[in-house]
Amino acid sequence: MSAKNEVHDTKNNSINWNDYLKSGDRIFIGSHAAVPNALIDDLIANSNKLHDIEAVHILTLSENVWAKPEHKNLFKVNSLFIGGKNIREAIAEGRGDYTPCFISDIPRLFKENSLPLDAALIMVSPPDEYGYCSLGVSVDIVSGAVKAAKYVIAQVNPKMPRTNGHSFVHINQIHAWVHAEQDLPQVFPPKINKRAEQIGQYVAMLIENGATLQIGIGKIPEAVLLYLGNHKDLGIHSEMISDGVIDLMLKGVINNRKKTYHRGKTIISNCVGSQRLYDFVDGNPHVEFFPSEHVNAPDRIARHDNMVSINSAIEVDLTGQVVADSIGYQFYSGIGGQVDFVRGASLSKGGKAIIALPSTTKDGEISRIVAHITEGGGVVTSRGHVAFVVTEFGIASLQGKSIRERALELIRIAHPKFRDELLADVRKHYWVPEYQASSPSSVPELGDVEMKRFNFAYTNYILRPLCPADERKLQEFFYSHNKETLIMRYNHHITQMTREKSCNLVSVDQSTDLALCFTVTDHMGEVIQAVARYYYIKSMNSGEVAFVIKESLRGRGMASTLLGEMIAIARIRKLDSLVACVRRDNASMLKVFEKVGFVRQPSEDFDEVSLTLTLTQPETVDTDTQ
Image 1 (cartoon, rainbow, N blue to C red):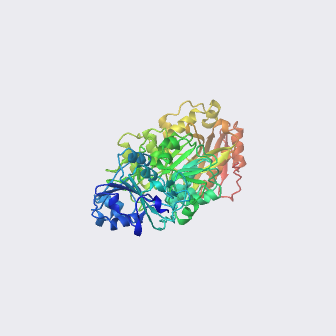
Image 2: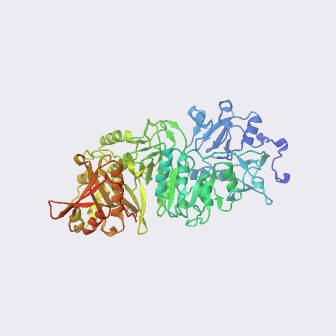
Image 3: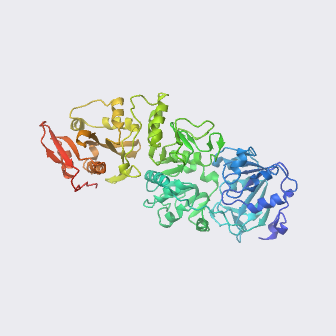
């Protein structure tokens, strides 16, 4: 670095801080993996009676020595996103403050002097031959701080990657610097437990080929990435990335070809991971870093068709309100970019805003799906923003749902031991009527993830258990039938499916009876396309089978697939047989049953054919899943 460009002489590699700061000033400290620790250490060592310096920052991955009690007279913490060593303690003990704000808004707070900056302490790479340093792995709000601060003071670190995009700062924008080599903090991919793995599988099922993703760091994001290996043409527009994207990019799963904005590029504002990730982004022309006011702007996020945002929460109440920055009165993290991306994904054509969280705390003693928000907790994302909530027990679809429907959807994905309690609680407010007989039960025989994806005639369908939240969807399915279907299924021309009747049909004790459905998601939301069920007959240890397929979808293999799934589950449950009664003139349905081994039995009713499949014999069933 040429001395002629220095505004301040940094002989002995130290700053004369009194040239830039006075007591009571506000400084910005670089973000995430780009905390300029050498500058902080130098400021502490040479503070020269400075005091009450307000330190503003977001998440900082370092020792965060400025937040230690012994430095409380020199520094006052003001965290815009809580995290990292010592920060949470400083705020909890009243030595620091938390300022809630959207990440996309922070650069404007600096620029418009809501949070005026006297100095920005940042870390950069050495300059290139043109005099440009790179902000490296953390452009985010650092870029805005550089533009707004009176003075920019840099730690020049030869180990900082040179990243592409809008990440460059010319040396004439820097007022003083020190040269200090520093390893970037490494955050290694976490070990994924079974609960995170199940959540990851469910979230992956919501992601279509060609989608653009916003994803964070931690067990759940890594689990999601783990289950995207068979997807195609995914893109990234995200506040950050971690190690999990590397292999997906190398395999071509993430190639950004279908993006409708920044096509061909992975766009992020920072990255946190292992040295492998830092090496991956170093000079990588396919990964570009942009400031938060660009990456997190909801209108820019919404320019991506099929934008999927994946965020977490501390708790979600039964109306869909998301608490993400506090545990009761204890502030824990921050608003961050969650609302930016939830809003952007909601405005995107085909977009999905997903909140993913475990159903309980680590010890399993507290439900994170709650009837009401914990006292002191704050809503980060409103009940009007979230489309999907995912736990290890499934996917709750909230978009366009009433409070009653939301409550039922969220109870379904709560931990089973809390479901009856949650249902009883919402009854107090008349959200769920008394005729809603029971909380939802599960079908573990479908696998850890109680959903399966099938493709019929080039359209994707989800097979899952029918649940209490499907009351309205089942009504809509019933009223879509023509007269012939109603006669074939119900043996007479039934004309009404009341709310109470529909509720009774979806309130299934799945541990004894069984009810499955095929759904598709389109412009109308999730729509039921087929329903299959058996009613358990205890005296015979048998199940009586019935199902109905939407008229336009018959002949595609749905009936055979549903029947095959029911047979498999009945075998696991050690039923002796399955039986069915089919109208004699329903030739297509008789063919479906007989193809998988059902045998006609004598029937007292001439209009009906009785069929039986004996399950105690060796399995020879052809399910014809097409």
